Image (spheres, rainbow, N blue to C red):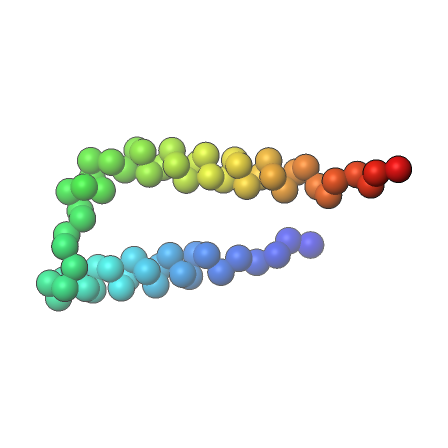
Length: 65
C-alpha cells in the first residue's frame, strides 16, 4: 500500500504565502533570481528524489549470525 504525502499541499501553501507577502511588499521579489536559476532547482529536486528512492530500495539490514 502506498502512503500519501502531505508535501504537495505544504508547497502550495508556502508558495501562496510567499506570493502574497511579496505582493504586499513584505518580502523581496525573488522572481528574477528564480528565472535565472530554475534549471539548477530542477536538478537538485531530481537528485534528491533519486537519493530518497535508492535509500528506500535497500531495505532493512540483514541480521548478523
